[in-house]
Amino acid sequence: MSPVISGNIDVALITLNAFVLFFIGLVIYLNRESRREGFPLEDDFGGKIHSRALIHDASPKTFKLPFGRGTRSTADYPREPIDLPVARERFPGSPLRPTGNPLTDGIGPAAWANRAKLPDLDIEGHPRIVPLASTDAIWIDGRDPDPRGMAVIGAGGGLAGTVTDIWVDKADRLIRYLEMAVNGVAGQHVLVPMTMSKINGRARQVVCDALTAPQFAGAPLAPTTGTITLYEEERAQAYFGGGYLYATPERQEPYL
Image (cartoon, rainbow, N blue to C red):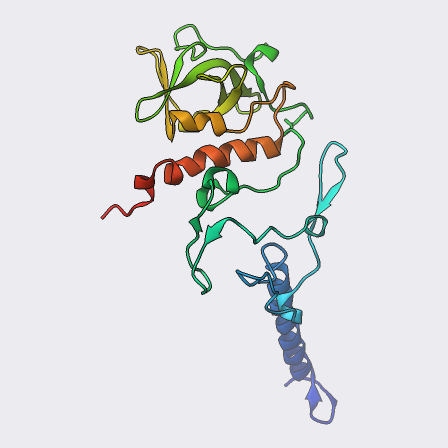
């Protein structure tokens, strides 16, 4: 038998009640922690917060950044704009129909986050993504096709420009971007994501079917500082990624 402490209270009863209280507290804690990012829920149209109850809200999460970059908290940034150039039905979760230029307006797959205007760093605190000419640690093997000087072909076969440089990831030893001189626009250079490009060494061509040839001129400009910030990467990736849905009207139509 469990030792009796007083009257009808014994150790087993105290243990059971303590476990129930602990479990209730754990559920509340886990629910609050899960709402540090992406919560509280907001109305799609007006941004009104649906609930501020104890279980639906939590203190902002704070991130400690390396290499003396301080801290960042979700409270440091205002909410995202809701006045977008789109048309939509008046019910939650309705699809957005762009009314402007979806590649630059941040709609659907072309959406972008307001990331830090600082370069990504490697483990030693140096800029991670740089032009190939600025590092001696990475080079193009003589047995592989060098994309510099190759023509860039867009969706539909049009000439978009010519590759002038390569931006490499020193940490992962990968080509991240191809810097391209835009065809017909003097002095304009943009970064084409390597993940959306295919190099044809025999034809001396780089094919990027994310955009049509004229749309390359609207892509974010390539940095001239020798480094690229997280924000600039985000904008470039969003512009080209959005092209897979918005480059042509046919891409927005159903397959069946």
